[in-house]
Structure formats: C-alpha cells, structure tokens
Image (cartoon, rainbow, N blue to C red; front, side, top):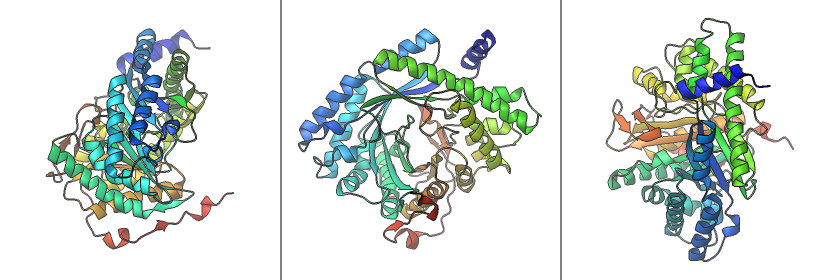
Length: 455
C-alpha cells in the first residue's frame, strides 16, 4: 500500500528534483505500408502515422495536467525504413523522400522527434540497407526532427566491418553537409548500435522492431536529480546503505513511469509496451548522472573509481525498477552523454573525462560514447575505429552499446560546440589520432564471440 509519506516524497521529486517522464514514444509498424510504388508508399506511411498518432500529444498533455507529472517529450518510432522502402527505393534520393514524408507527418501530429530512419546490418548489408545508409547525410540535413540509427553488430552475429567503415564516412559527410547548409549538426540525430533493442523509447536510437506489435506505447523515465537528492541524505554511509537508497529511489521513479504508461494505454487504446527506467540527464543544473557519481564520493566523473561507482548505480537502478513495472525494456540504466549532462561537461573541461575512460564506463552502463563532440578534422577511418571499439564492447559483453560521435567542422580541442535545447553544448574532446586505416579498410565481418553459441 502506498502511504501519504511516499506520495509526498514523489511530489517533492517532481517539484524540486527534476523528476519527469522523459518521453511517451508511440511505436508504429510500417510493414503493412510496403509498396513497390514510391508515391503510394509515402502516402501509406503518412496516413498510418497520422491515424495512429494524431491524439498522442494531446493525450500526453492531458495526463501531465491530470496527474501533475511533467512529460517532456512525445515521440514516434517506426519500423526501420530500410525494410519498409526496400521495394520502392532504387536510389538514395528515394529514401530521402521518405525521410521528408516522415518529417512532415511528425510535425503534423506535433511530436518532438521521430525515430526509425534506420537499417539493421549486423551481419551484412542488403542493397536497400546501403542506399539508406548513404542517404543519411542528405536526409538528416534536409529534415528537422527525423532521427537515424544503424545497428552494426550483435553478440550473435559479430560486427559488420564493411558497415562500420561506411559509417565513419557517413558521419564525416553529415557533419560537413550540416556546416555547409548552416543547420543543426545532423550527427546529433544519428546513433550506431551493437545489440540494438527493438523497444527503445529514447532518441536518437529509437525504432519499432519487427518483433513488436502493430502499435505500442513505450515510456522512458528519468530522475537523476531525485537519485542525487536521496544520496545526499546518506552521505558517508556504507555501500549497502548507498545501494538500498538508489534501489528504493529507482522504484519510486519507475512507478511514475508505470502510471503514465498505463494511463496513456487506456486513453489512446493501444497496448502498453515497456517502461525504460534509464537515468537520462539534461543540461539543467541538478539533473546530472555525473553529479550522482560525485555525490558517491568522486571529485569528478572520470576520477579513479568512476567505473565501479557507475556499475553499482546501474545495477541498483535496474533492481529497483524491475520491481516497479510489469514490463521493463529498452536500454534501462544510466546514460552518460557528454553534451546533455552539465556534470559530464564539467568533468571533460577539467580533464578528468576522456573518450578512453568513457569506453571503460560503457562496459557497465547503458549506451556508451554518447553526444561526444570531436575535432572536425578527425579522419573518417579514426571515427570508424572508435565505433569498432565500442561495438566490440557490446558484442563481447552481450549488452547494448552505441556511439553518437559529432565531428564539428572548424572546431579543435578546447573549443565548444553548441547544439541547443536538450542536446546542450559540449567541449571538443581529443581523439587518439594514431592511424588505424589498415585495420578499418579490411573487408568483411568480425566473427561472433565463442560464448554467443548457446543453442
């Protein structure tokens, strides 16, 4: 039974500690829209998204008002477009036309972002996959709220190094085209994965997996400020007390997400999918995962002990959240984006946080090298090498890992890149520029690890 004291605690989290529901994401299958005629395909995509999502924003705002719970974003994820457009798209320009349809329709229904301009190529690329990947620079610099993701590897299949090599060039081209057109750097809307989940509600990596139902509602909760505030009350206590405090707080945060998910499902008439109980920071002061690590006893995120602290945080968040929701999925853990977390920005500026340290932290948390600005003159092969390292961590450790690297033309180490809004700003971080091109230029696939064979 929920006590009045617990209700008061939750209200305090919302009012004082930046607790919010970060997103309601409606996942929509577009498989039934497939058509060999591009014009008909685009019409079907528009009509289905509009029919399913026309009431999403209004319903989210009503739930927020009725329950007093901030719901920051309303989003849509769709079936990976490389699959949907395979019959109709003969050129990269054809795929770009679909991206524009997605952008126009998402704006029409009023959502913040739409994800799913995606390809799944962990074992190899079809012609449609490659066309979509090559279209990403044009698609992301001619649309505003479309997000793109590419799954490059998995524990079961290994890593498609041909796709890794191609993505290094695509990321470079996207940055350069963004600069030329004076638009938001498209790489902020592009993420590459290993072991991408089918039900992730967070952007830029959200897509509606083929294992999902026709339409589902996934909710992503946040709450790093609430966790930090709880830890302030146990400052100096032992690790057991620390763990129990994180776990109990995560339970309360996730219960808020469960409430919103159930209510959205009832009002919209679509099934509830999952609650993603990730700690997702924002640039707002007091809404930082890095600040939690500092509250645990570190001078800065990146100091010795950071990986151990993050491992404990991630584990206790999962343990608390699992008991609070009927269905937990997505990424679920602690996000460590640099530009979206003021504490991470401070750590990078102080020299406490490097890309290599972030790689180590990836082994024990959600996602990985996220929203990291790097010098604009970084070579495409260097970017591919960094991606390959991150994919290997996910493949071997049987977990989701990802990269959202943002080369910023004209910027060098020590400069600052401004992205705005929830994307924040980031210092340009140094990369290891020793050459890896002969490794990256090898063709083929890195085989799956031996422990992947569990049939």
